[in-house]
Length: 310
Image (cartoon, rainbow, N blue to C red; front, side, top):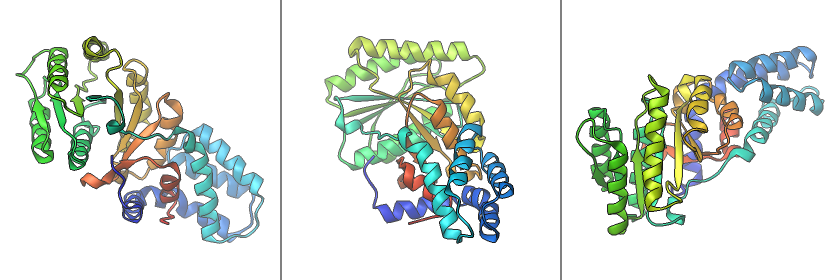
């Protein structure tokens, strides 16, 4: 993803996270501004952090950090600054960048995640961003069981000016992936973006299908896919943790994408998901626009999460 002017993105990020910010900070700020630090105030902080889905481990560390600050009566700004620093400390080691134009050609990215997570839209936004930078992009619709998913991807491909590869209903996804990658190498594509099925009704069948796609890609290049992005929907709250556990290890996920952060009051769920995963967070989304999907920045996210835009 190319970098967007910082002020514009931070403004959208703050706006997108406003529901989470209100949930997390309103009562916390009120408590700490009214009276000096006390055990009652710390208990209130713990309660509100848990309600924001930060998880018990991160909550315990943040409360301990506040206890060590030992400040007296403070301003609203000071409380938010301290909370932002504490959240950022939980996340900074879990941030990384998705940079497909800095890798091998063609750079193959596999998108995994449950249906409805925002996977197809995320792929489309990335395609539009890359073609906007002059890249030659191929989109591959390997969810051959859902015609609606293929149609949605086709629309994104047309909008982005990307090449689109698909097959008939029920076709072998691995065979399609192999043929598409072979063509991409022969025709000097820069990036190949592969959508996959997200049905969880039969987890073993889903994982077998994903692993088969990976195996056939490796027949062409042992390092492929060069990136496997797991797309998670923030609005499902802590269910995102379960999804990470289903896909994370079996599908060899190398990066996380958290979408729909603007649709939930519990954006703090990004913290326990990041800490539970072996893969870093690479992208976050806070809206429907193409520019509303950006590189994950732990400090910017944390400050927006507590209502600090700058």
